[in-house]
Amino acid sequence: MEIINSLDQALELTKNKLQEMSNPPIFWAGHRTEDAWALNAVLPYPVDYSIGLDYGSSTEYLERFTKVISVEKNNLIRKEWNARIASEMFDEKSPSYSVDLKNIKDGFMFPFASIMHYETYCYNHNIKMMSPPSIMRSVENKSYLRSLSKNLKLKVPNHYISTLETTSYKEANSILHNDNGLYIIQTIEGAAGVGTIVVNSEQDYQSAVDKFGPKATVIISNYHPGPSSATTCFITPYDIHILQGYQQLMSNQETSKNSFCYSGNSFVTLAPKWEKFRESVLIFCKWLQRQGFYGIANFDGVEQNIVDVNPRCPGSIRVLTEIQLSLDQVPLVLLQFMHYLGIQFRLSGKLKDKYDEPLKGSMMILHSLETKESIVSNEVKPGVYKFVEKDKHQLRWVKDGWSWKDFNENQVLLTSGVVRKSTKVYPNAPLGRVWIKQEVNDLKSGRLNEFGRKLTKTVYNLFRLNS
Image 1: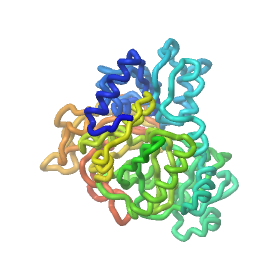
Image 2 (image 1 turned 90 degrees about the vertical axis):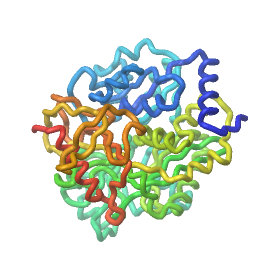
Image 3 (image 1 turned 135 degrees about the horizontal axis):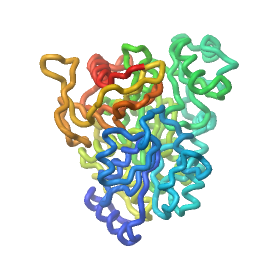
């Protein structure tokens, strides 16, 4: 059993193990191809393959180090992330099957989306996945998650299960005894960040019907106004490490054209009622540990309510990894890789204590607000930007940049699949991510603060979407 005292020691152990295994290929698989940088930032060798949906102007930089296999690479179509489309890349009977995957064998895969989509492929190609599929299947079922939470004596939001065609916005309010008219609709099966809609009006409810289909079986839960909580954890057979909780805004909580819908996290501010939420997360982590789940898990909640559990690398893992590196923490994604390489280790008390340090920074994912398909008419360059001194509603490109260390507190980084010029963009499809080392949430309302609104609007306008 190795006692890890530093990041350098963890990296050296990983490097030696990989060399001992003749450097097997390493895969990143999910929606966002550039999230492979979560591993590239810490591994002694770059990821061999990044497999996903999006391919933006910023992805070309990743291809200097990693082979990118993407649905979007050879066309200019950006759709909302969809786990089904990702799974088709691995299905030899599908027209979306990538021939680049045919002759790959052996290695390790880090899945972002629900890994059950990749199971058959990985089994046939002797590729080991970084999470146990059986646990993921269970916990990603929202109905099972609610019942399990009750069995663990955790506080659970008032909820019910229905098809969208057999209920309505007003009926949902009545069944939930909901006075504020605010609740969430989730698909029963996990959908990797695209299976949840925050509903606050008849229009929002109709958006859920349009998105999931009227016959979709969903779980409808009360949702308290205000910022929600999130945290990311790492579980081993003998340890549970929980990062300090942070604020999260969910997709569709900002729905009007002037609000510029986005989803994302503000790590600057401690999650509301953090200690209570942490208690619930710890109880759930201990249950996962008893079931044999070892690895990364991400939790979303409101107050001490656990609303969602994602037992895999979350969408925020890339920025979390880089923020952890800036704080001299051993990133959770590296711990997961070490565990699946078979390295027996524990962290020293000093390194454990560092996980209690506040994370500082914000990540925002911008989505298209257009109601119809639109075309990107401007070439938006990824990299570091800052506001023009004389016009605070304009951003000026400053320099190339790809990581957390490339920009300062007065600048922003535009990264992660920045959509290319002439791309056809579907409604609600992502345009790219904005990283910033400032607070963007309003603590009372749980929505964007004035600065966050100005920033998202300014970046959104850069793309000049024409319907």
